[in-house]
Length: 361
Image (cartoon, rainbow, N blue to C red; front, side, top):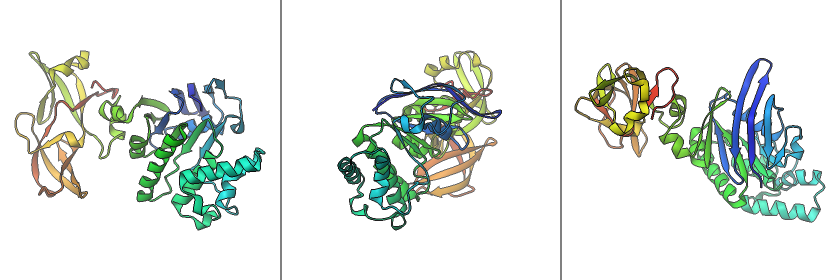
């Protein structure tokens, strides 16, 4: 097994900067997820680690080796692609064994490794089938098996579940988590799906426009987003944002908008620093919006859409010229058009610089 280290890694295509100075350390046997919207540079970063793209600057280390000039076959990595990339004329056994045969691994050792991987992935009864005889999930497991038999130092996965239906995605991502625990290897996983990122990785690397925005464990990214982009990208339904102004009144500090005034807890005032009496953005997650609130902090809001999800309802409001999202009990009697006063849990609210988007707290 091996650690992976990126030092100021960049990638340009002509004048376009796709990855901009990424510095990242991934520990041995760690499961790290690169997540971000399409075009953020996450797949290009993965391909540079694999050796499928050259770097325009910076250094990549796998273990203690600098691998910038090494080809993919010499980096001791195995990659699983979005499109499975199975040979259609070969059965599952031969697809999994092919890479080992090309490396002249002894036949007995190939057989041992293929059967070991098949047992881990539940592919034993399917080894004689060709890809066309497999379901999408089975094909994905076969692609994973082809990577496992290599016994690589690092597994690289580029959106491997994007071709699966919703139910199969949930099932297969659980299998990948169990696989990482069982084979105990370093794994780097790319996805645009923030739910996958939250449920799979030891740490999440959130990217935007080729720049790393935050690196932290999933719950830390959710609870303590580094900036407004991360706050809005991670979480489903997404965080709501309200423009406000910070105003000091005696020893108290308030976040005030057109029709609300929310006192900032005293313990959080210091985080605002010199931004008092300036513009800011108030962020609140759906679970931290209080329905049927009263008092000075109440926000008058009209229900636009009610989404029943079985275990709960998600409510979308128009309030103070912005959109607010809240969660409600499954059997609450709420309909579109209802006027409901909303409150915000002050201990769970987020505050961002209105210009830079950087989080105060």
